[in-house]
Amino acid sequence: MTKLITIGVVILSLTSWPLLFALSQLSCMKNERNVFIAATSCILAAFVGTFLLFRRYYRNIDPVMYVFSIFCFDAVSGLGNILEVDGYFQLQSTNWTQIDPYLKTAHGTVSLYWNGIVHFLLCLLAIYLYTQRYSHREVSLYWAGSLLNNMIVLLPVYLIGSNAIRTSTFGNIIHLLLAIGVLFYYFHNSPSQARTFLKFSPIWKRPVDFFFIIFFLLATIVAVFRGLAILGASPKFMTDYLKLYEPYLTDPSNFPKFQALTYQYIYVIYYLFAIYGLLHPGQHWMADWSLIHAGAAAQAQFSYIAGSLHHRTAANLHPPLSGTIAPYFWGINIAFLVIPQLFALWCRLDDEHFGRSYTVELSTPITSRPLRPEKKSQ
Image 1 (tube, rainbow, N blue to C red):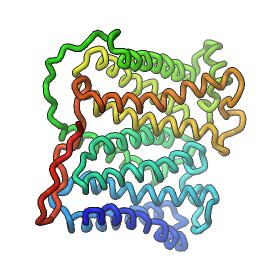
Image 2 (image 1 turned 90 degrees about the horizontal axis):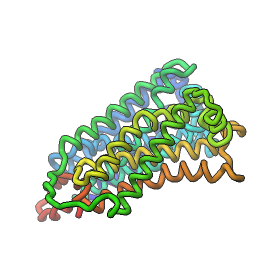
Image 3 (image 1 turned 60 degrees about the vertical axis):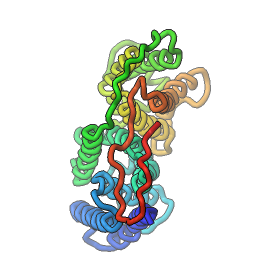
Image 4 (image 1 turned 90 degrees about the vertical axis):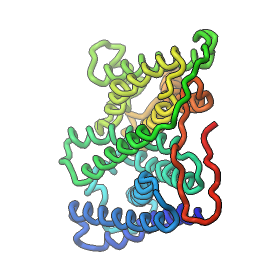
């Protein structure tokens, strides 16, 4: 019976495509404001549907589940838009690239694919885990980190770009606020952490921790270097780096630039705190923040690498695919993608060093049968 919730969310999300098709046939949908009003109305209708669905089978429902249900609907509708923009099918008469020029950029295209596939699956997985009375905190934090990176890069480009601020910008601001709200909600409902009295070995006797410290140190250097280069630092080796190694950073859309600046001004702060947590084990915030960072890094690197290879990116801005330069580009960017995932897994496996991350209060089905015992992370 509990699986009906997940199935219902999927069905409600898929209704976004026929709704988009029907609305696009209306002449009033050529107006940006009307499109925003129609989209908001559809999302509110999806919220009402999921609200009734959850209330049918559960009591004391976790409010985050409503957020995930809305984002499932939003992700599927966005995926339909970008599939049409890329020419995979033609169902709607509305030219979405005129309403939102973001769709014409390589970064915008790959970000919408990420949102429509990965974010949809993460939200759906969180809902499924909730209905099965498993911990969904880990998946939720990963999703929040991914969405935060997306919005932190997107919104500044909207504000300083040559295009006028559009109504879709306000929708993205709501996305950002909801992601922050989800994080605050989970931080407020953190699991209890047992105080550890273990004596930890020195860092040189912990080779895995030492490896991650080296990575975070090198990542800090690379992030600061790329940030200074994109800001116009004068040394020739920095300008040569942009021309030869990572020309996509100079893309006129400015999305790669702001991604590099996000690394320099936000990620570096996390790197330094992570180094401290590795040097001084027992920092129980590490488990949660490693998941947030892993989600953010996955979204950042997928958008950056896929965007640099996309056909909408000018050929002279594509990354090197062969020669002596290519290993540097791919080595750096694959490391930025993969190692944060490994670090989150490492923190997950060692709660004595890094703390535990699990959902404090599980779902309460409306049923006369005995509830399944709570399942917490080991």
